[in-house]
Amino acid sequence: MNNVIAALDEYVCAHYSDYVRIAALEGYEMPEVLYVAEDGNLARRDSSCMRLCHQAKRDVLLARLKEGLSDTDFTFSFRFIPLRDRLPERFRKNTFAHLLPGVLHRCNETAESAGEKLDIEPRFWNKIVKGRLWPEKNTVLALALVCGMSGSDLNLLFAVCGFSFSDENVRDVVVRYLLEQKVFGAEARDACLNEYGISCLPIKRETR
Image 1: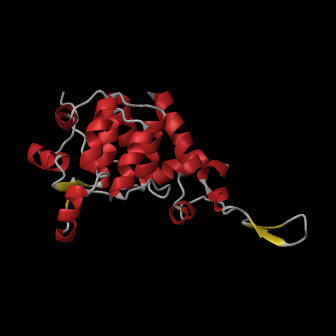
Image 2: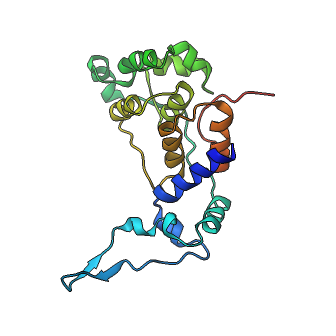
Image 3: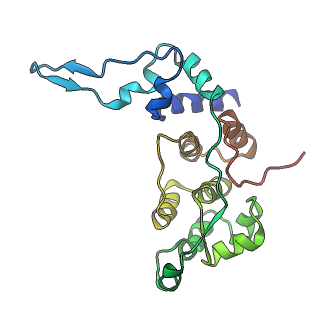
């Protein structure tokens, strides 16, 4: 388990890019963003030079980042479809509800089996599945994790929902790591989410 967390920490240091939060960490050393290029002109380095992976004391800074994290990404598991979109939604081919069965089939799941792994009231999950409600981003991320979804299938669902990953969001960085590295076991997955204080995803946790 420690190896999984250590690898996640490396990933976060290399990808997390909320530079306002990073630069505010006690002990953070601001890199030289401007430099003189070979042609003698003033040039600017890519902002990625500000990421924690370039800091000499990155372990200390990462620990301080974790201490200050709080999960502010809570949402309900669904969105109501605006009245103006309800009729067109019925005739659109590329919708979450239309694409979901194929995605779940590739994950060896059904809408019923996937719903049992989500912490969503069945009546709302059924409406999402039938296209009567739109899922929130947290719902799609949770679905991808509990079903062991491929990156291409998640991107497909993201595209029709209007979502995308953001390197400025700790939740997104951690979930993307879990998906890329196929960390789908409940124990390892939950340990990684807990390490970064991510509690907003509607994943049904095992009770002991």
